[in-house]
Image 1 (cartoon, helix red, strand yellow):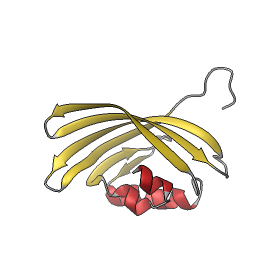
Image 2 (cartoon, one colour):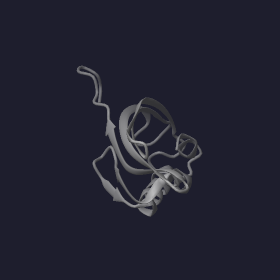
Image 3 (cartoon, helix red, strand yellow):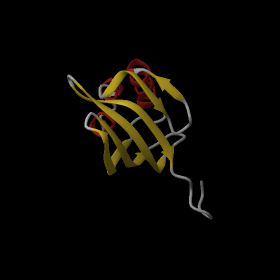
Image 4 (cartoon, one colour):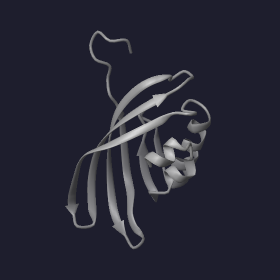
Length: 121
C-alpha cells in the first residue's frame, strides 16, 4: 500500500482490499468495496494528494484467530502542494482475513491525528 501510494497508483493501492471491504477515510467518508476504494484513491492521487508520499509504520499486529488479524499503524503523509500541503499524521486500524489467495483487508479505518494544543491546524 505504501509503495502504491508513493507511486500515485490508486488501482494498485486497492489491490490488498477484499472485493467487499469497508474503508473509512480521515474525513469519515465510508467507501464500500475494492472498486470504490481504488477509484477514490485514483482521484485523490490526481488532485489533493498529487505527488505526496506516505510512510506507514506498524504499531501492533494481533491475531484474533489464525485467519483474522488486527493491525494498527501510524502514517506520515507529506503533500508537496495544494490545499493539503505539508506534513500530516494519522493512525489506522485494519482487519485482515486469510483467504485462499493470501491476506486481504476487509476493514480499514483511518483517523487523522489531532493538532497539538497551541499549534496551527
